[in-house]
Image (cartoon, rainbow, N blue to C red; front, top):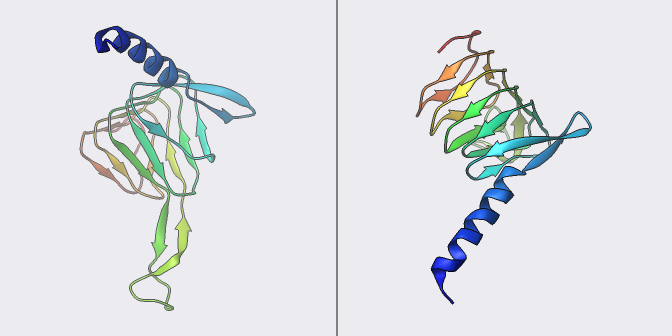
Amino acid sequence: MNLQAIRPIYKFLQRLYFSFVSLIASRRYVPIRTHGFVKINHRTCVGINVCSNGLVIYGKGTVKLGAYTHTGKNIKIYTENHDYMSSSRIPYASSVYILKSVNIGDLCWIGDSVTILPGSVLGEGCIVQAGSVVVGFTLLYQS
C-alpha cells in the first residue's frame, strides 16, 4: 500500500479527532480547540474558546480554564501533592494525597513547557513565559 496515499487521510482524521475533543461543563458540551495531545480529568471546567497545543492534567483535583485561554505545547498542571506532613511515613505517605484546585482566569496566555503546581491561581489576562513554573497567585493582567 502506498504511504503517500494514506498520509492525507491520516492527517485529516487526526485533525478531526483533535478538533472535536469535548468535555462536560455546566451540563453542556464545550469544545476545546486542540493542536496536540490533551489529557484532562472529569473535574475540569472549561470556558468558551479555549485553545491548547498540548496539555496534561495530573491528579484528581479541580481545574478551571477560563474563557479565551491559550496554551502552548507540553503544559503540565498538577492538582495533588503528597502528604509530606504525615508522621506515619517518612518522607511522605505514599497513599495519602492533598488535593488542591488550579484556577486559570479568562484571557490567559501560557507559553510552552509550563508547569503549574497545585493551588495556583492565574489572574485574568496574565501571560506565563515559556519554561516557567507557576506556584501561588498572579495578579490581573500581569506577565
